[in-house]
Length: 255
Image (cartoon, rainbow, N blue to C red):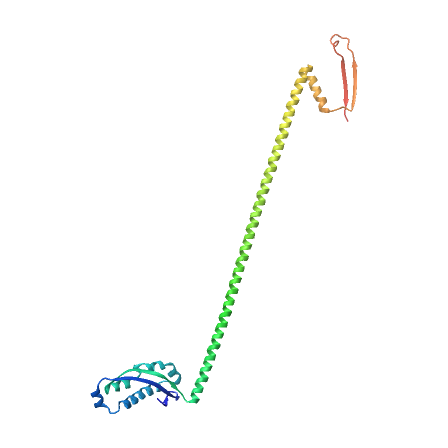
């Protein structure tokens, strides 16, 4: 259909394909002399009503409704009144004057360019977001690894200090044990030496027949050590009490 004007005064051409069938011949012969003209007039009225209620942009977004019989009320009603049934209507597109078509093509190009620019911008933003997220993830993982390494280092230091304290304690206990063993060994040696000395003194006293005083004098001389000066006076007693032994007097001095 030529010269259909939209609500915003854009003149367009609408193409449709009509499918119908005859259902009542007598009704057709009685009600019309030119059914095709009736179809064209009713169809034109429906298209003019449909396009005139919309702007050019609204028309472009609702063209799929031109494939529905509900959009052709006058056509369906008139066809039924003259013995026909409309089975299907197919929208075959629309056309516009060259100037309007040029404007429309330019608008399409601008919209397409804007859509592409927007998609490119969205893709770029998505790429930046992905990079930031991955960088943040890497930083978070690195911080976690650093924290784990620091915690492990502190644990190792604590274990090393505890081991050092344990070794120090063991060394101290070993030193104490060695000191006790040394002291005990010295004590045992002293006791053994004293016992041996006592045994020797007892044997000397017995073998030599020394009195307690003589044994005490021997011990005193032994303790005092070698004298620096020795004065010896010897003589022979003529009395009977001292006839069997000589008398010996020693005088010892020490510095």
